[in-house]
Image 1 (cartoon, rainbow, N blue to C red):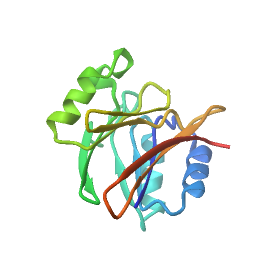
Image 2: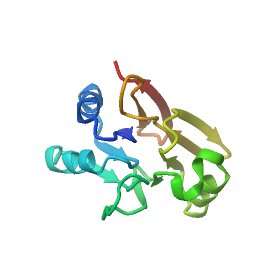
Image 3: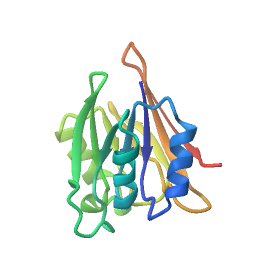
Image 4: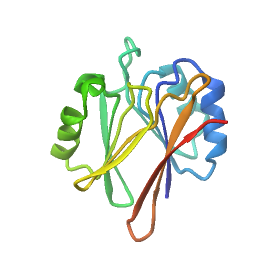
Length: 156
């Protein structure tokens, strides 16, 4: 199974569509916040895919939750934007929240900096910002054997 992870689109629908088109075989699209209009676009236009979306610090008056926890291929995935866990100051609070939730994978945004780590049983990904000149996104593949492969990619 492939999961496309985006964040911080900040109104850049063109880059979001480009990322989705580049990863057509993704069955799940996760948006880690700061792009409520683009999140609604995903939900309205990609009904064949599971869409998971959380609100970010720039999604004022949003009804999206601040975090989501879901399962895919037996793996627990914790999704949040990152601002409520001071992600720009370090990973301790956000990884602690993911571990407390029993997550195998942590997905977050907010910093606009792509990041993939594996730390003590937890896969950690920030796809960067899917906006502007340095737009990027994340890809997670979960194999039939339950192996997890994470990567970030620049949008070309």
